[in-house]
Length: 220
Image (cartoon, rainbow, N blue to C red; front, side):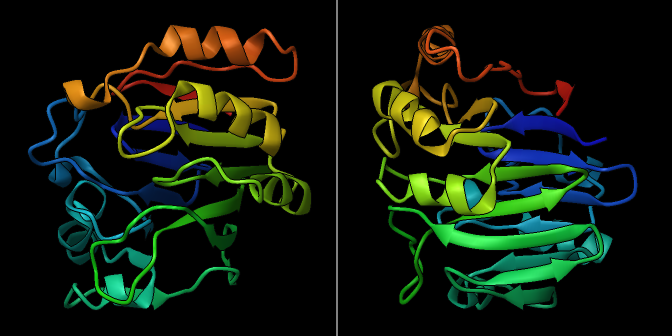
């Protein structure tokens, strides 16, 4: 069994009952955050890129918990005193719970020399595609096909990432049976009608869209 807990923006926790994987822990100064850094327990932290609203409190949480931080080497280079594992796009690392593969994302990174990325996480009998901050791109089809994605976690807030129109196509490209929207309604600039996204994806009859609010947990 694998559970998904949403903390707001692009931060969520995957828990298979033994290991916990946290993504992009932007919690301080996040108006919709459902937890504080000191509330979080995790074994691994995935950081998609170097923007403040994604790196967030990764270093603080990693130092307190001993969690391993997986990220592009240039992003890891901005942190000190953490158990870091540098990766690059296309690479896969096997871990005690399964594996993590770094995949492309079309976005800026903030850190010189670095690139933005997404992750495919094999854990608890599921294959979870965390797209990170990205636009729509055709190779999402390959990610879905080659990795056998069962759950897609996609940004829908527009302006900095895909909007609803593009994210609906992304869901179709990836082919996952569950699609969870993130990176919306944190600020007015990325406001989005999540129920519209849900209707449009589910009207195609291929996937269901659990709308998970900050602080809520669902079983995948």
